[in-house]
Image (tube, rainbow, N blue to C red; front, top):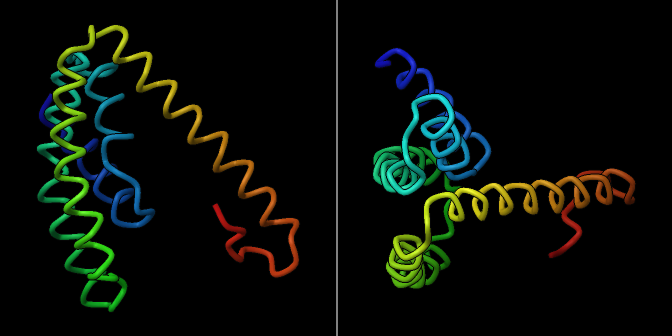
Length: 132
């Protein structure tokens, strides 16, 4: 089990730092499906693990001058409130329903990103942003 957790941690850390994704998209499904965690326990554990990952990755990106600190301050302050509200809401939702909501969220985000990627690949300028 320890080796499996190390592999999942390495994968999630690399994806988080390289792609800017939250490690939760790796941690939560892995903890639930591979290690038998309950959905609530997987989400709580994932959030706690993301803290050290975020500190290291943000420091590396900041050193490369790739962090917009005024934006971070505004988003961070709002995220603290949102984190409290979201965690409180998640605890009030039944585990199986929470798992379905999490999976549905991942599917919707994936579809949106694929559609946006296809649009930008066919647009003049190739990989330039196409807006929200």
